[in-house]
Image (tube, rainbow, N blue to C red; front, side, top):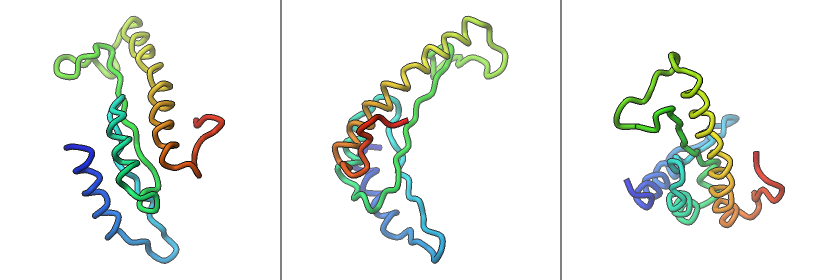
Length: 117
């Protein structure tokens, strides 16, 4: 699915998903996978702020780094696989900073001028 197509579908959803008295909806857009910064750019550009409460970010780590083959065990891993997975988690800081910068460009009122965490 392209981000343009998703943004159009999301706007349709957000238009018809109504708040209920005393129970406002928190409409969350499905955000980018890892470093797909174009996805975030298109969502922020094409979806009005009043239709979107938040955006998700997806980043998954594996000790093997192989999504199409053996992913490794969720519980039976050795020390080397553990440390490799933790090392992959360090990439998250960069992802959050770069996606936040794109979001801040389009939503200056909610910008994290001191850094978001």
